[in-house]
Amino acid sequence: YGGGSMSNTKESKGNTNLRAETRKSLEELLAVERPELLPAIREVKAKVGEAVYARSFSRVDNFNRRGEDLLIVVADALSRSFIERDCIPALKEAFGVKRVRVVGC
Image (cartoon, rainbow, N blue to C red):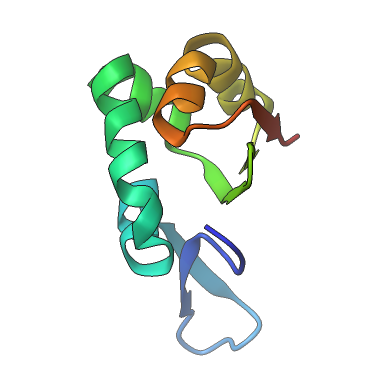
């Protein structure tokens, strides 16, 4: 995913200063924004399993591949820890990259 927000925005009724955001899954967003990355993320999901994938990738804010680097921006430290602990080898293999960097709070 190359830019923008990873969430759907919906303005709150009556107050234009408030809005509710619902988070889409990483696969839904990649399908629209970066469909070329979808096969690789599905391969990661198959390699790490449904439970690990759901726990690790539920709070991704940005996802970008450039050359041999993969950058993943997450919303919290727990998500970052899960990805770093459980998914780095699968990400490297599926995306054909040498380096995976996970950043977040």
